[in-house]
Image 1 (cartoon, rainbow, N blue to C red):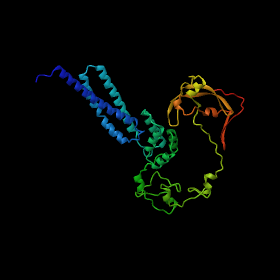
Image 2: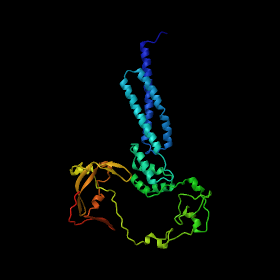
Image 3: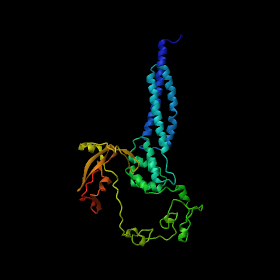
Image 4: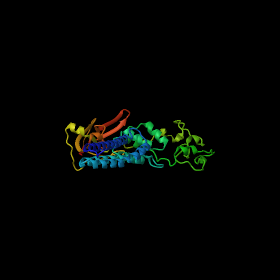
Length: 366
């Protein structure tokens, strides 16, 4: 046989190029599927272990792509097109791998002794850095899953918080996680009977170490209430355990005066409401304010606008802050800047929340 003809060489060349392009397409499809898995990680309720295994596999595809793409570039003359193919793949690869690594790093549990509100704030901040559209209920579930205290987890799940702000407010009312609070250590607790209240406060385990993280509300000792050897205190007024009748909180007749927060320091309005009313947004000396929510979220305002607010017979002129519609659930949030005015009186009775306007000689302009 003689040497191959030009047509045969061209056919071999095209077959080789098609094979390489097909192989490159397979590598790109693997990256696309992995990217979809990363973006739906919290929604699909996947485990971090599965993500780690997938990540270790996908990292090897970069070298495969580099090898295939280099061969394609040698066989073609369209340098600009092949360069764009390489740049597009590298950007998608590094972005997806970085997001996956961030999820793995952030998918950690609360440490023993860590403050729960601090844990919630830090984890929520890390999750939002992923720049993935995760629903509020899935964010709350991811935070609750990382808590090692099964009692706190059970209470948090039963509350069915609708968003992370409510969850953060709840965790802020709790103390730090116990230093030693695992199921194994629970089984190792061996309570020794005692005959006095002083001995009851020092119930110990099999290693003669006081069990931490557990407080009996009957004697304040470090053991469970059901194992407390001290006689149970029962209130004859409310029939509850843990205190005497003279210490019953239900018998208290002292009046308590507290300030009531409305949920916002300043009055807020949606941008769509301002546009509907035909008002003009001003960027005055206040400028675009940066507001911080209960969970630490930062929101930049659209500006301010002067409006007259009337609630029942209370009326005042205020300079309210305008926010984008996506940042607010309701059209308007009345803040303390309105309710704290001298001519505004508000209180709560058995029928509801009452707001009244008072006659004052001085006019307050804001």
